[in-house]
Structures are given as C-alpha cells and as structure tokens.
Amino acid sequence: MTPTPTKDQIIAELSRVPAPDGTVDIVSKGLVSEIVIQKGKVYFSIAVPPERAKELEPLRARAERAAATVPGVEAVMVTLTADRGPSRPAAHERSPRAETASARDQLEGVREVKHIIAVASGKGGVGKSTTAVNLALALQMNGLKTGLLDADIYGPSIPRLMGLKGRPDLIEDKTLKPMENYGVKTMSIGFLIDEETPMIWRGPMVISALTQMMRDVAWGELDILVVDMPPGTGDAQLTMAQQVPLSGAVIVSTPQDLALIDARKGLNMFRKVNVPLLGIVENMSYFLCPKCGERSEIFSHGGGRAEAERMGVPFLGEVPLDMVIRETSDGGHPVVVSHPESPHSQVYRDIAARIWATVSAGEQQRTAPRIVME
Image (tube, rainbow, N blue to C red; front, side):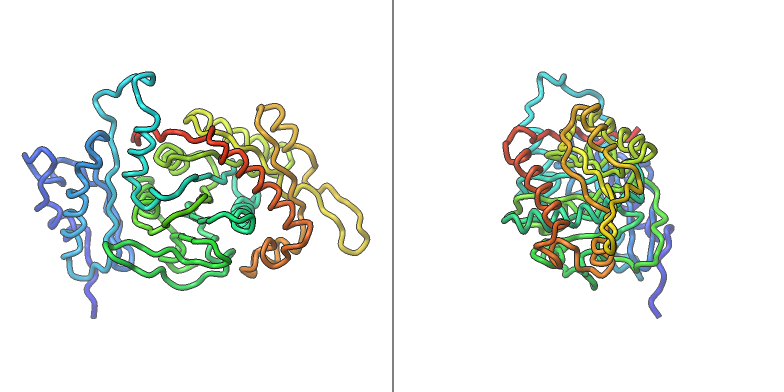
C-alpha cells in the first residue's frame, strides 16, 4: 500500500534546504507558504526578492527535489513567489522591452508565444468559458497558431468544452505537453484532477498552479494564447494580470444591468494594472425562436454596446442565446468547428478577427509588473 505523505514530512525535508542568505533553512526563514497535499501531489511556493527570482531558480528546483524524496509523493509543484522588494526604479527609468523579456524568461513556456490575451468577466454564469473556447477556435480557423489556457482553477470547464480527456504527457525536464483538439493546444488543471474534485486552495496555491501552467508547459511557437480567466476580480485574477505579459483583455458580459456592473469592475481592474482593453463581448444578446423566428431579448439588449461607449473601449460583437451553442459546447464540439458555416460561428470569427487586428498592430504589447504579495 502506497504511504500517504504528511505536511510534517515535507517540512522536515525542506528544513534541509538553505535559505538564499545561507544563515538558516527556508522553513525557519518563513519563506515556505502553506503546503497542500492532494492524492500524492504536493504544492507550495517560496517567497523570494523579485529581482532575484531568475537567479534563485536552482533553489526552487532543490526544494522540489527535497519534497519528492518523501515516501508517497508522486509529483511536486513549486513556484517562486516574488515578495515586495526594497525599492524599484521609477516608471520612466524602466525599459518596457527589458521587463517584457524578463517576464517571458521567468515564464519559460511562453517565450515563443507572440501574444497572450485574457478572456475575463466580472462574474460567473455569463458564458465566459464558452466564449473563450469559440474565440480560440475562431482564431485557429482564421489561420493562426493558437493555444488555450484554462486559468479558472476553481471551475475548470475547458476539458469538457474542448472534448478532451486523459492526462497530458510529461516530457523532458518535467515539462508538460499540452493536449490538443481541433488544432488548438490546450492546458487545464482539469486534466490533472477528477472533474468532481473541489479545488480547496488558498491564493498562493492557485498562483503556484497558474505559474506552473505558464512556465512548465511546452506551448511552443504560437501566434496567440487565449487565457480563460477565473470570474471576478480577486487575488488570482489580479496576480495573473500582473504576472503575465498580456497583449490585452476581452470582457464578456450579458446585457442586463447587474452583469454590466460586474463587467465594469473587471474593466477597471485591468485598467489599474495597465492591461490594454481589447473590448466587450455581449453574450446571450438575444434569442431567436427556432420555430417561429420571433426575437426575444431575454436579458435585455444593447447594454454591452452602451457600456463599451461609456467606458471608451471597443464593442466587439453580439453573441445570441441559442440552443446550438449550448448543445455543441456541452458535447465537446463547439459551434465554431461543428457548424463552421453557421451565423453563430461567423459572429465568433468576426470577433476573433477584430481582436487579432488590434493585437497584431504591435501597439498593445505591455510589460508585466513584478508580482507583489500584499
């Protein structure tokens, strides 16, 4: 019978790993976050000064090896979380190109990815993941090398939406090979856990998992990587926006006032961390009865366009509420690939074309601020 590893055993092994200053070990120094163990998999992070993150990569690897020696441990996921440094140059003294390169160096897996965009929403239940999947597929059908990252750690739905099952292959240097369907490279925490297993993780563990899926996945050369963000504006969303050199963000909302209030929060969050806003998608914009053809505006209509004008951001398009979109998504055959000539597919392809036209213009590339844990 395989032994079950405990936190005390992990801590005992990590106590043998010297802290960066060499005075004591990383546990005594208080650098190790809460340790999470799930079915033989161990997750934790190590706090280091941001300016030394790349230099201290061997420390992360050593801690990973130490934890792996505990009987019963099947896999270890460790990330370096940058603490607030003593000082930082003023904005006018920093080189945007250097900072972007530094961010991509730390996230090794995305070094060959030209553009990374976030698909986000202020709240759940507005069809964000369905939109992200169909946009990624539309970008691929428009001739682009496309990847899709499921960053919704607490509710990973991309495996089902993309019709993918199983586990990603492990290649050299503990790097994961993304799974692929419909020509889109895909990674999700949902590939690594059972669909019904709840993710009872605190913020640092979520950040560790997100970092691992950016750094230790062999994304290869991509024109664009679509990131399905968690809903809301909490710690995971903020850290993702700060840590990853995003080319822009797309906000998904339904037309009614309550959803638009939350969408506005999402827009303002990205503005505060200087992520370019690519625009708003109004999802479930209207319903056309398949029997009589009557149009019903179940969730109101036009709120997304009005909000885009009010906030001064582009309005990307209206996606109807339709059973075909729901049925194809639930079945793992998204409408863009299952009904490529349909009006619904054309809507997504038009939105994807507008997004690509903006990011490929070369004016939206941003720098990624260093992570700051308050």
